[in-house]
Image 1 (tube, helix red, strand yellow):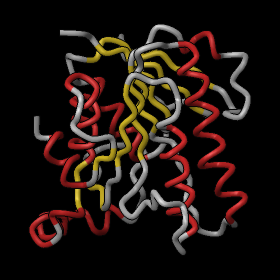
Image 2: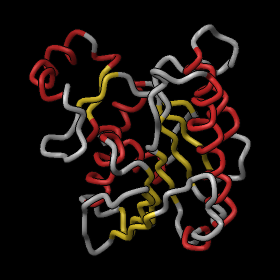
Image 3: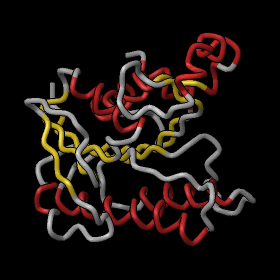
Image 4: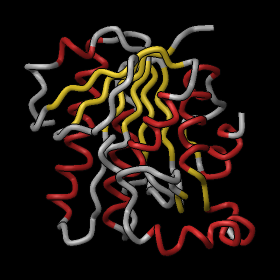
Length: 221
């Protein structure tokens, strides 16, 4: 079984921290590189961290990306309070800049991007965030990766005990069993998302865009 050497972004956010937690506890993953603007607060034998404040300029650290066969891109910003130009800069431009850098150092890499349910692949809809996410997805598929998988989760149930869970989840998490029962096609756990990323990298998946039902099916493995 091929051992995964994984780059993770966004590990000081809820999704990235959850994916890091899953990878740290999965025997298929042998090495993890996290790249953050500030320390993630984790230490582990298979974990290496690079602190880098400018994701638009990666030249000084790019060589350290070499030797990895997967990248789980969990870094993202909210569109609330941002116009399209600013949101595009921190969603499309930043992501493509990072993805281009890691693809240049690693042939045969699988790149997984956390997008969102409702993303607009046509890039023509009324929703600004959905258009920008759609363009980001479309342009990632043009890069020279072995595989690109685009994860579109809906409601995400966090992993208990994590540091970077959004505060409002502490008020609503107790309702998750009801959410799952009533809206199962729109909910995933962070555990399922992390396992689905590993599963897609190890075994592949039948299509590049994974909606909630695909994430949950793959995440049960």
